[in-house]
Structures are given as C-alpha cells and as structure tokens.
Image (cartoon, rainbow, N blue to C red; front, side, top):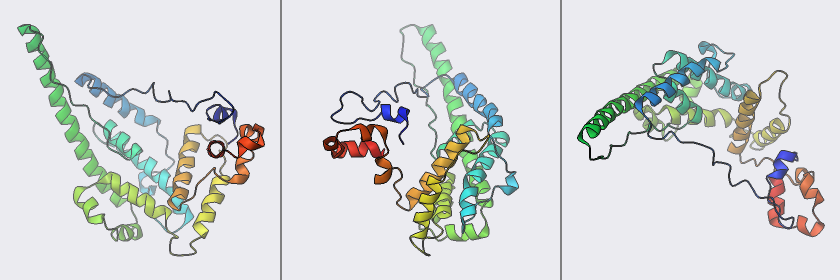
Length: 277
C-alpha cells in the first residue's frame, strides 16, 4: 500500500504535479478487422500457448463444490484445470479459452465490405478476398458456439450433486440451462462457492475474508502470475460480502505520501481517498 510505484500514481491535492496515469490504456491494441489468415494464426497461436498453462489437477480432480473454505481454494484451481483441458482438446480453442478466462465472450471481428477503387480487376480481387474472410468469420463464430455448448456440459459435469442442487434453486437457472450459457454458469458457481456461510453466523465470513486477505503471502517458487490469480480470487470473494480492502484508516496512516502531508492537507477528502487506494 505504501510502495513507491503506487505512490507515484496517486493524485494528492495540495502537493502539485503527479497525476493518476491517464495514458494507462493507450498502448492496448484491439483485434481490428484483420485478414482471415491473421485470425487463424492468432487462434493457432493461442492453441499452442495452452501448453504453458499450469494446473496441478487432473480433469477428474477439477470439481466445483460448496460448503467450506477448501472449496473456495479449489475453485480457481478447478477452473484453470478445465480451461487447460479445453485448450488442448477442443478444436480451434483460442476463442473459447479466452472467453472462459475473462468470463465474457471475446469479439470475433467481422470483415468489412471492400470499397470500390474504380479498377474492375482490383475490385474483383478484393471481393474474392473479402468472401474468403467472411466465410472464415462464419466458421469461427460457429466453432466458438459449438465449443461453448460443449464446455457448458463439461462444467456442469464437474459440479458435485450438492452444487447442482444449489444452482437449480437460482431464479436464472432455467435461462442459463436453456441457453447453455457457460459463462453465466461459471459466474453463478463462483458466487455459490464463496457465499456458502450466508445463513450461518453472518459476520464470520466477513472476518474470515479480511483475515485471509491480510495473511496472503506469495509462496516460495510461486509464479507472480499464479499469486496474482490467488489474490484476485480472495479479493473478489471478500467483495461478495461487502468487504472494502485497503481502506482501513489504520493502514492509510502508514502510507508514505499521506504521512508526509501537512495536517490540514491530510483532512482533505481527496487525499484520504488517494491514500486508501
């Protein structure tokens, strides 16, 4: 919370100068319309990259359940293992694995209709190329839809009977089932997994969430990316209960920049909010 990197991005009033990094997203590129060959190469590259995904579980061990803290710890490991399986076993799996990782459908770029150049030969070649791109676009969309349907059945099979029974009580269950909506299914599994204590000792899960957050440490030999995934899971679980991490007043007072402010500037609400972030 008080690291130098974080401090440099905060916008404290009354100190002059340092903004909040408005250029954060400037270097991110979109998929664009692209050529069909580029889409195929991109998809193939994603398929090859699946071999670098890590999972300590076999598919049979990738189970979704609820009722204890160990099931919360199991959730992300199970999801990672299933995505690894899909990436290595499904046809053209790049789009489906990215969709499951992000829990939202990845967009597939529709090729733009070429405009006339005034030259009949050039226009004809452009039209033929566009037709090939469009055919590939339709195939890619269909493959994603087929993969999503297959993934839905796989995710459902990996749920315990207890989890299935819990999911069937949801008001949107029939809609998810009718549409084979695997992304919404995973979201509901996650919510169910992390809200198992909601009818017993209402304050206990809140205290447990804060304790788990503040006790988090990166394990020896644990990759930064793996630790980050664990961190996100813990934060998201706590937020399900309304926890607001990093905003405790006692922690805020240990922020290096906030401590250096004059007393009158420490009282400015904007400075308090900056220290809490």
